[in-house]
Length: 153
Image (tube, rainbow, N blue to C red):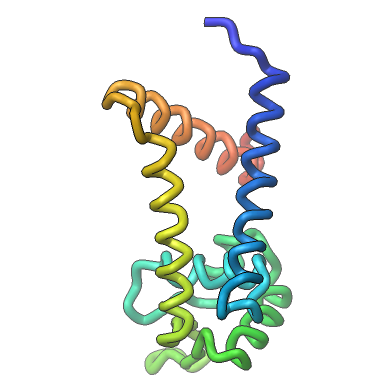
């Protein structure tokens, strides 16, 4: 198979930029206009954490590839705005867990629905074989980016 690498690069770049612009516009035009796109991604990292106890600050920083100090600043803002709450571990007082408040959970769910709608729109009209090919390609792209992030180019 022959791939037009320039066209693929343009598509990837435009997809990335368009998603960010659309997310920013959606936030600005909603009742959640006090949340930046970076703060939204922080809320996503907390909401995507499968543990009932919440996510640790280190887990959030690792997920977003940011320093602890950068995440702490973001969490301070989100806590002040009422989107997250912090609580200390009962067994180890040095560990701080972060959870979404009701307000934070509402925004997280709305954001998740945006992505669900986007995926439904992308696969609309695709047969199962083409949807599976797309899913495989996205999984390979994700693995490449994770490997790159971890220095395994």
